[in-house]
Image (cartoon, rainbow, N blue to C red):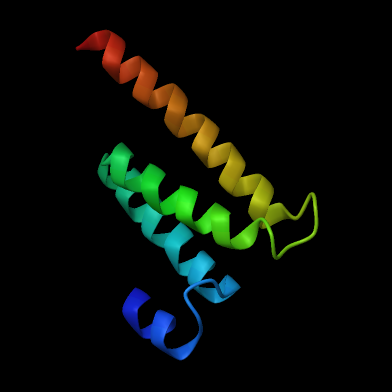
Length: 79
């Protein structure tokens, strides 16, 4: 789906950002925190400059990234 959206829209189109966030959600649920973080970061880099400050999508992504960083730190401590 991502490749199709990147061809139809531009790589930096907000729709691509939403697909990236959804992929991050999938990887997060599967426990692949590093992949989820990469997708969330890319989504945020697309959406943040295009949406107004305080937009719920941007706030949500920032919250997800904060949560992931906490999870990754906790994982490192237990290893």
